[in-house]
Length: 227
Image (tube, rainbow, N blue to C red; front, side):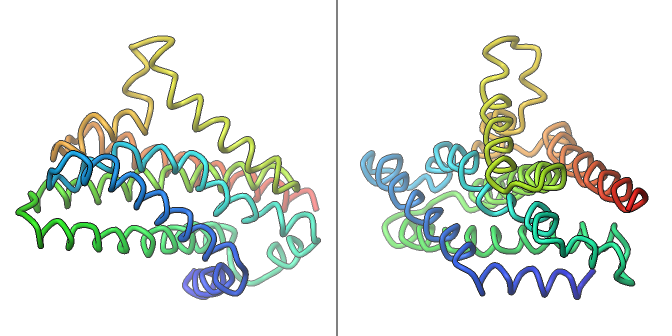
């Protein structure tokens, strides 16, 4: 798995994808930092994450759409299936490589926290809860994006499918309030930026990630068995 992780992580920065992802992420963070924090004259670092989470809906697909779709279209998927590494190791390697790219982007947001510490006293525990929850939400989104990429050979289709499902999950509670607890972005926004870390919220986000990692493995194993 470690070899796959290293290879995939390097591939994000040997192409424009990693730089584009981090660039868009930080550009939007800067905008929301000004609109949600600076404009109101407060030192609540977590406020901007209410808005920043919404951009994950549209930029995570940039990170995930090529994961397996590109391999399938170019024909290199067969190399993966015949390599000595297991499907499980390959899936986890790709998953954690994408997570690492997002973690790098998230670490850059500490610049905004440092700015707030210079001008005031932001609540550190709340900021840490927000960052931790944001990472869990990101991992949940990456897992679905990876699954979407595994079921098609078209990167654009994978990206659109991923973004479409994220938008649906975002607005799902508007159709039925009972579904609120199944919407990762709404669960994050209702708890973590307030400094709350409930077992239910963590369980939902972790279970979401595990579910789509397993589904990705099953899809690839099934395709390998019919080759």
